[in-house]
Image (cartoon, helix red, strand yellow):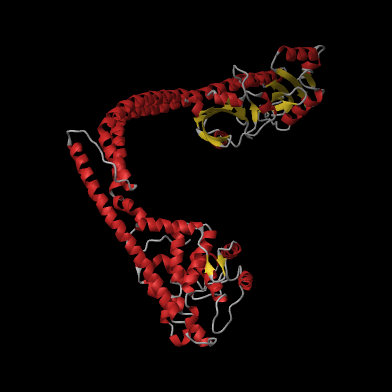
Amino acid sequence: MVGRTTFGLLPSTASLPLALMKISIPTGYFERVRLLHIVLSVLLLVGLLPLALAGWLLSGRSANELRAIEGRYQEQLVQNKARQIELYGQRYRDVVSGLASAFELAGGVRVLGDEGSDQRLQKAVMQDPNLIALAILPVSGTPHVAYKPDVIGRDEADERVGAVLARMSESGLVIGRPTIIRSSQEMSLTVAAPVMGSSGKGEVVAAVVAVVSFQEVFKVVQQETAASERELLDRGVPVIFVVDTDARVVAHPDASVAFAERPMSDLKVVQDWLEAGAQVQSALAPFTVERDGRKVTMLGAYATAALDRHSRLGVISIQDERAALGSVTEMRRQTLLISLFAATFVFLIGFLFAKQLTQPVHDLAAAAQRIASGDFSRRIDVRSRTELGDLGKSFNTMTDQVERYIEDLRHAANENKELFLGTVKALAAAIDGKDPYTRGHSERVARFSVAIAERLNLPDDEIETLRVSALLHDVGKIGIDDAILKKPAALTKEEYEMMKQHPQKGYKIMSNIPAMRDFLSGIHMHHEMLNGNGYPQGLSGDQIPMQARIVSVADSFDAMTTERPYQSAMKFEDALREIKNFVGTRYDERVVEALVEACDAGQITPGRVRLSQRAKDRAAQVASEAA
């Protein structure tokens, strides 16, 4: 973008009041705000900070204690549930091992051959609500199987008996993994014990196998309410479930989860139980899970229910920590409400007090703000017997003097600006005067550039900077030999290379003047091309500033439409067509479109540039400032 116009000597006349007040006015304004805020902040800090800090620390301590209590409760809870499951398993281990021992004392299972023995076996199964099937299987002989047909079929009973017998040896009792009975969708556990022969040779003569309902284990983890797992967690209620050593759920408050045998290995508390194995009977294991796309801290505990030496179940408890500590959240909410009420009260009282204290300062700041905007007609009336009254009188005296100084500086600034512009125009005319064929060239390039910039809707200050840069774009020709500048024929290759040095020479001349910094891009880069084939730096694309792009098009357009010793002036339309041919390679498309638009609108015509309404308004403003 084109830089801002400063002219390097004095600020523009419109900005003189703000320039003079740029230290005192904003500082005074913010002093008022800062004083009010300081008074209110001190009152709020003194009144609220101890209350809020004490409440927060107390709630934090309560949260830690409640978290510890919840942890201990969960650990105790899973231990109790694990013991209940172990006792349930022990009960049917005793039933099966007792039957096996009874058969051993009776010398085998021959007694089952007596009349009515199968009926008695079936009756025993039907009378036990948790016994689904019971099988007496001699190594040689007819198996005796009793089962509840409404729960399990004979084929499925035989399948479960066969699965547990495959794991049996003379080593003792075997307990299978809890599995689902397909026909009734009920979880069951298979327990088997060998019947040893009386020969003393350790020979297995039969096996006693029981298929036991796992419903009692479901009751152990069941909640009093029929809520889902998510609802229980949202209420802060512990959710207890049982997993096997494969991390699959075998008992859950939601029976569908257990029947689906969903793996729970993604929960860290389950992973901890699997890693602990039989070495740790119970432990507390807090962890985090992702719910609804956010991390949720959970309280977790686990305990091991050992059905026998080789069969273990994990009793897992999980609880949403945030919901479990709801009372602490409520305490913090009440603390916040009390703090807000106290803050409102303190703020109202403090505001009234601070308002009385800072009102005189506010009046001074408002008056200073009006002065900064250029209004010197107003004075302030601070009716106070304190130092603020003296400050008001001194301020009014200062305003009178500043008003006089502003008028003097406005006149000086206008004179300085006119002197600067006159010097630039004289310098441009002197440069163009070295070559009779380019007389008036810089002025025309400046006018073309302004017309293009107006079509591009550039700000006024950037247009003014562009105008000065365009006037001085050929200042480097001061350092070019007159024999080359005034040569009435085309330049040789060596002469052309010397002529190409004028942008660099102009840059070196003007870069030593700090006030010329904003005009350098048009002076230095107006012969650069978008495709990088220009000079002196070979810049391309966005490396070329807008100021230089505009001057480049304006310079070329004037060169094409004026008589030169080595070429005749081109027709207006031909020059435009020629420039359009180089869009994208040499010239910026937007700049060329702006030039064409200005020509089509009649603002640029052969030999002259008509002032736009915007330019007339700028000129009127400058004239009014000078007056």
